[in-house]
Length: 139
Image (cartoon, rainbow, N blue to C red):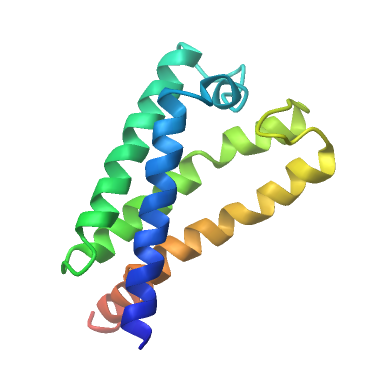
């Protein structure tokens, strides 16, 4: 039963990333631009496009590795992606930039609370937490 739930959670996470990656490249590009901190080096639009492509690749990996032994590595990569974009979410909060309907400090703060949930979701549904624990125990 747990395996089925984990698999479903992995497919849902992959679907969310598919939507987010598509949004980066199309209908929500301006909103994603608001998440790139002004101090981040490089062209803002390039960062949005690149992050969209990375999210699409991660979505494909999650959806294709549904029952594959490498799914723990895919989950780890997804968790790293969620950690990597966290500074942009923090910048959106600290610099009070509106995007995605987040127009108050409280709504932007609540969003920050969900980032660790995404990290744990990616690690749990792909079995990465168990893989890391077992790998460490075998050393």
